[in-house]
Image (cartoon, rainbow, N blue to C red; front, side, top):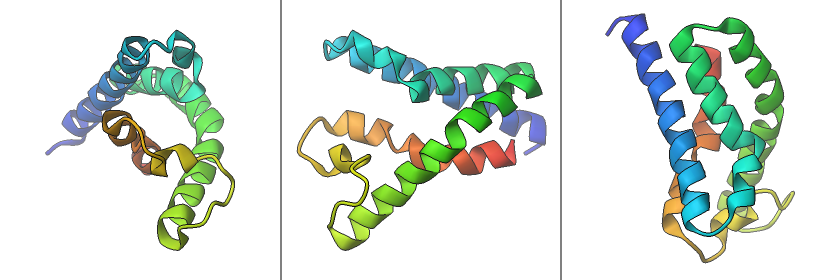
Length: 117
């Protein structure tokens, strides 16, 4: 696969994830959820990748990388030790909507994809 096709796929992936996350929150009756930085960031990353806008991409990377790394550390700590660490990813391990949990796994692959892009 050529790099252009991979970048287009990544851009579409982020756009779709952002749109699905927003729609999921609206459908669940949580319109305030659309204001989460990660949802807005997913949409912005998707647009940045598709339009090859490096300034927008770097700005979103600077905003999101640190919080996503902290979320990922918290996630793996809870997953491995079954203990709570920061409390950021606790919701993932609590009973609740499976679709939302699957959707939130984007925290795990966003940082590596940002570095790739």
